[in-house]
Image 1: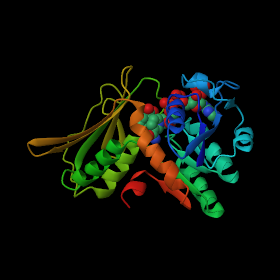
Image 2 (image 1 turned 90 degrees about the vertical axis):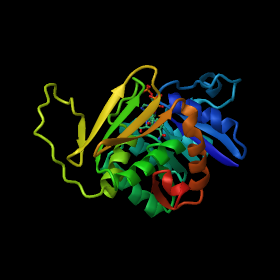
Image 3 (image 1 turned 135 degrees about the horizontal axis):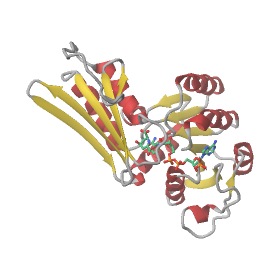
Length: 266
Ligand SMILES: NC(=O)C1=CN([C@@H]2O[C@H](COP(=O)(O)OP(=O)(O)OC[C@H]3O[C@@H](n4cnc5c(N)ncnc54)[C@H](OP(=O)(O)O)[C@@H]3O)[C@@H](O)[C@H]2O)C=CC1
Ligand SMILES: O=C(O)C1=N[C@H](C(=O)O)C[C@H](O)C1
């Protein structure tokens, strides 16, 4: 039985993870942490009967009371780094979906996990289709180096571009074939109209609208043709199989694994 606690328990992803853990064999929901909903029974958050697990506002207290093996974190970029360090120091294993964590914090987490010989998984996207979309995009970039990325998300998302779009841009940049851009000097009549630029010339565009969940198109352009690779998460259930894989695998890891693909394909 793996004892799992959830950080960001009152959020959209935290609630979905708690529902999933509660119906998964060999896993037990052990604790819940969030800055919102202190003292609330988790059952209220996931529309189920009372669970006797209450939301803690203090991560250390929750860890001491719940003694989880794994803590799943879906919070905010500003909090996730500190949360991960506290979880590691407490001897539990973090599985982190929070995006937008800065590179310096990630390095500190890598050093700490290595020093403590404890496993940690950090993945900007847990949906299998999104992992494949990134893989196919990296492959296509070898033949079509001209590319733009459009990510589309619900209107409550705080970070832009999405973690997935940034990871896609990194992978595309790494595997890109020969690239000789021959473009006219552009005039942006509204600043930002051409999006953000990764590596100088990979344009990323972020759309935020109610009704959306999480979507991305990677559009390649070539002589007389385009190739579009698109993934749609139409519900947050899409992320759950990947989260469960990470929870099971992190129990046997030492150090940080960045990206679900390393648990699926390596
Ligand atoms: N890797 C993946 O597959 C996926 C990653 N994500 C990422 O997960 C993160 C969460 O997304 P989502 O669930 O939609 O966001 P929500 O805003 O719905 O949930 C985040 C929760 O964390 C709480 N919170 C804020 N600060 C802290 C803190 N310091 N300590 C503990 N809890 C805190 C928030 O409270 P309050 O509302 O009061 O601020 C909220 O309840 C985002 O970074 C998102 O990009 C999302 C989907 C999939
Ligand atoms: O905030 C979200 O919702 C999502 N965030 C992740 C990201 O930033 O890539 C993963 C997915 O796109 C949903």
